[in-house]
Length: 229
Image 1 (cartoon, helix red, strand yellow):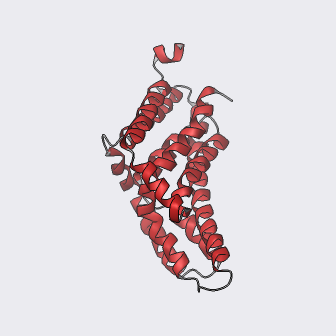
Image 2: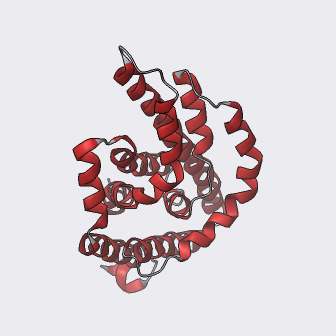
């Protein structure tokens, strides 16, 4: 495994973990509605867990699918036009730097990226309403798969970076790690939820993660000095 891939997967997990407070704002209401739609009684916790896992599984699968589709196009283009490779690498580095600035809460410009997916979401959002209320796991899975296309600057930035990985498989796997990073916030209850919230609220930790992503982004850029080292 190359050093970049070795760093990409834990970086994606870190982005998901520390950025998932935003995910709660976007998807938390749906997660809560899945539980509220279930009748309280014997086996409630088991059904609740199944619903949440199905929803989040569909969501993460969509992330991986979108990254794979974009990576399929970008890798094919890079194979035919070798001069395109430095440009794609530059784009990946810039996206990492922007995510680092957002993670450190220095600049939230990545939110403008959400406008890119607005037309797609406009077409898909009516389908989500047809799945509500959710009573079965397969409905939750389908809802999660659709919800994965919801316009979100953090997700889109991570998708753009992941899709520029050297292979389709590594692009999809990067988004799987990102999705796994968001799971603790989406699934946690009680003490664990408080711990995750406290972790996300630590400014020093977020800024340290932001600096790491900015440095990783600079290292990714096709600058001769970095390439030589």
